Image 1 (cartoon, rainbow, N blue to C red):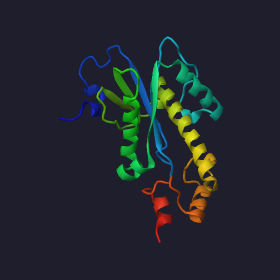
Image 2: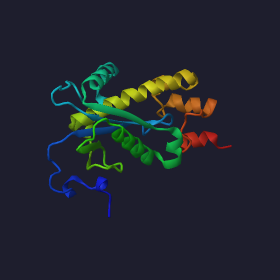
Image 3: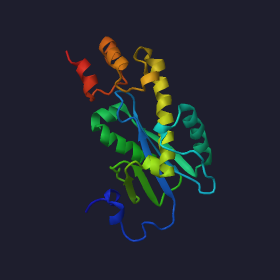
Length: 206
């Protein structure tokens, strides 16, 4: 029998829309060539609405930083989790992303009644869940999760830059830009690069 976590909303039993805490989940960092993938889960407080929530990619860095602090202060609870470079290389990026999402949900101080996840794939969870394509633009709790995940990962990239300034992680955030690819060819891969990704694997070949 399939896990309940993988069922679509219309396949869930009656009572799916019953009142209860709803957690939004999103990730940041599936595409980059380096660093962990990050996921966040957020349960918003209806009595403390947060203005300006939107898909993190559509917000300026300054606005994301402001909302990051506001979400942390006003949400009922939230959790940010990661899957490491080693886990990405061992499991593949999809499974590592789902693992980070599961860790984020399981790390919530309050147990949600249901979970809404951005995208079209779901982690295995012990509570009912629904995948929503472009959910970060449609569901405020997912928008909030996208902001937490994005800001947290950008801060991790700043730390990567301090350890490995030759790659320019502070600007490209690990994505395969022309400058990043040139640095990989010049310096090779560092310990924080994802060796299972083709552009990184290519520079490791003799």
